[in-house]
Figure 1 (cartoon, rainbow over the protein chains, first blue to last red):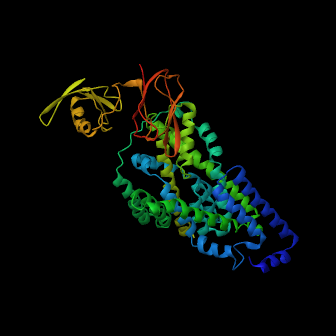
Figure 2 (cartoon, rainbow over the protein chains, first blue to last red; figure 1 turned 180 degrees about the horizontal axis):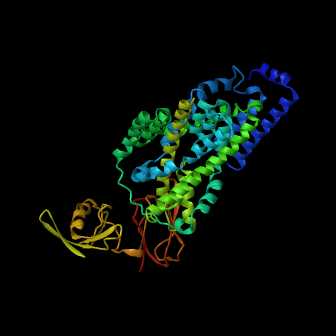
Figure 3 (tube, helix red, strand yellow; figure 1 turned 120 degrees about the vertical axis):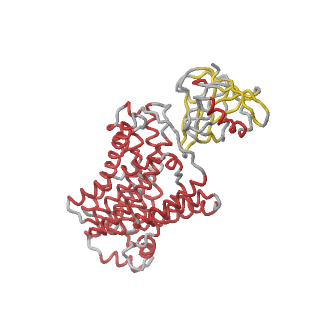
Length: 374
Length: 141
């Protein structure tokens, strides 16, 4: 570290800014505490928390020439970190349950409702459209997507958005089940689902990432980089011939990018940019986005349940969000809590992978929308 | 139901168990085979059964498993890998008692008895990849 920057920091600050920095260091400590004691997305919140502490000790990304300044320029402004992470995410996703049950795509679309609900609400309370859209991206319930979108639309809000997205994501087991339970009847939750997938051949599994990349890049160019890296990772895994690259994607590539992404985002959390009412609005609207996603997904699941003549368990609607595979596991667990012989995991996984794709698409759509309106 | 099948000039008498059960159990000369018909076509007519016969040939390794159907056999509700087995032949189990655990999509799924009874045989071992509908555990009655 450059010692003169520490000197500048100590001398140039007035007491008010000093208090702000101390407060932000406390925020960083809280994030680290949540990561260690509660295991809330520790892989992300721990580096973010530490980065936050560093930022308020004069090592922020706004400190020209510092390590984090360059990391921010190189990895966040260019969107390289979220995209590298997506290669790893792609290598960890199994699209078979979705390919085998294509109708799950509908649920993956319904689960994105929170993005647009919150976007509209944020505009109504007077936020500019780019900030409103960036906040709405929390409803994608997908860290890299939210960071990708907000770094393009409202870089100043990105840190708060990332923190909200990752904190709430780790709270999914607490946020979702009460909503799912309130919106469904016991009879609906007890619906058994026949698992009758289309046979998925190895060839189809390998063709899927290529076809999706081509199609999405043509119809939604702003989502193309995210889809492309996600599908590249998936192809590495499914091709079965590049085991070393597949393993690297699942481990080294995603781990290194996640570490530096977290640290750098943390290092944007200086008091002057973070301690304001917008951050509170982001935390509130972000939570609302999660709730709306769950409500819309579950209600759509109910609709499918009725239309199908009680052959679809509405619980799988709630996992039409990203947050793979946690959301699917929660739906499957909830069904089993009431009937231990009810296995809806594969259906939930189909809905969940559709949600992963849906959230990326919805993120791309946000970028297009703002570009058109502006 | 008994069906005569002729393959390469040789006639076989095939005893087919419950065609609604998965797998369908077919017995040829005392050897039992598991048959997985295409799910789209309900296996109810003799015609579709004979369609499935090539699969019989393909399933070269006989599966040690008595012909049965209905609730006598516990089947895999989802595809996965057998993670652990909690029941053994001779055990008397009650409804809700864990029989085995299937790991699917990195989630452990506890397979529990839906009835009480005595276990006749455990048809899988730890580490086995089981398809959806595979026979896992058999009751004595």
